[in-house]
Image 1 (cartoon, rainbow, N blue to C red):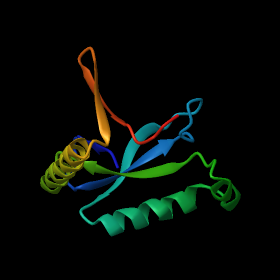
Image 2: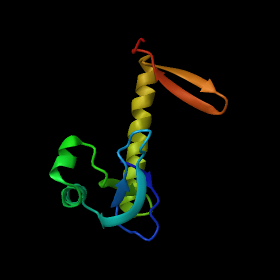
Image 3: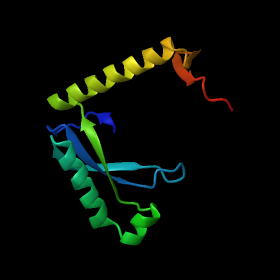
Image 4: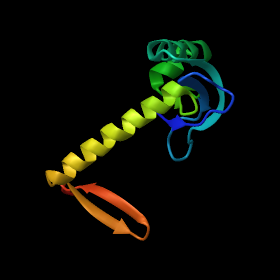
Amino acid sequence: MTYKDYKGFTKAYVIVYVTGTGVMEDSFIDHCVVFETDNKIEADKKAKELKIQNNSPAEIESTWYRNRYHVNINTLSDMGKELSKKFQNEFDERLNKGLEEGKYDKVKIGDMTFYMDNRVKF
């Protein structure tokens, strides 16, 4: 889920109409918000309904369908701000726990810091 400012919308969950298949040669392109709600279950249900309405069964089965509907969080709404804050806190806790347990190497390149999982060997 993407946490982003959606100006003009007041609900926590927005459904964004997206085209593309999500691969490098055909990246997702956000077009517009088509629905908003404060209920996650309702948002997921509406996104699935729109996917079925706007793609053929064969396209959906192939997973290469172009009309997609992503459920994102509007950080301009009160509930969206809380969800974003909760996500950030949970992420920070997991990252710090992983660092304490020695699961990640901290790599700094210029102004950017990367946390590399050192349990995966190539």
